[in-house]
Image (cartoon, rainbow, N blue to C red; front, side, top):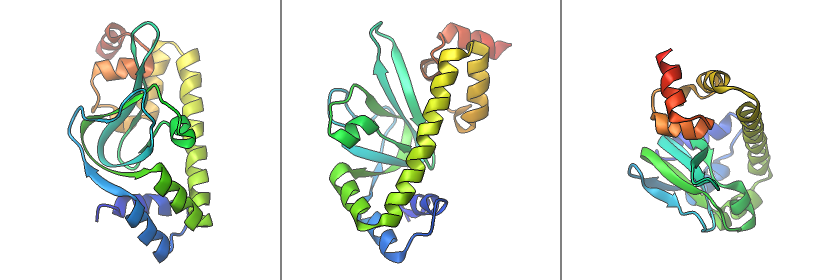
Length: 189
């Protein structure tokens, strides 16, 4: 039952065989988290790819000015990892934590490689998902670097609807690169 959402999500990208389902169940490990639980520490290798059944995860880092910057927040039916670290077994500067209690599935890098080697179909589905996430990050990067505070908040409300009433102003300001005071002022208006 824990893998049902993941398998259904993957089926949005293509058919999944019975053997592929068995391999997904074999390699993706269910895990219950607590609020504020750290899943990946900064300066460690991000050797896991997470899938959210329910709850919220976020990837964040501390910039040179000492400010917290949230790179991404994952909610139900979303994946989260630091792809550079995951892909290259490289040190990562991010922390991945739970914003709220969550039920997740994760796969470590070696098992992920085995899963990809086991099926060209799953590798093709992974490529489609990766393309989709890359497009999301590019659009978000463009918005953060060209939009004013009002446009950023509007973009958030249109594109991150599931987060709208689930994250506090601190996380929201960190996610949109807007001061918390500005977020509070904009919400009042």
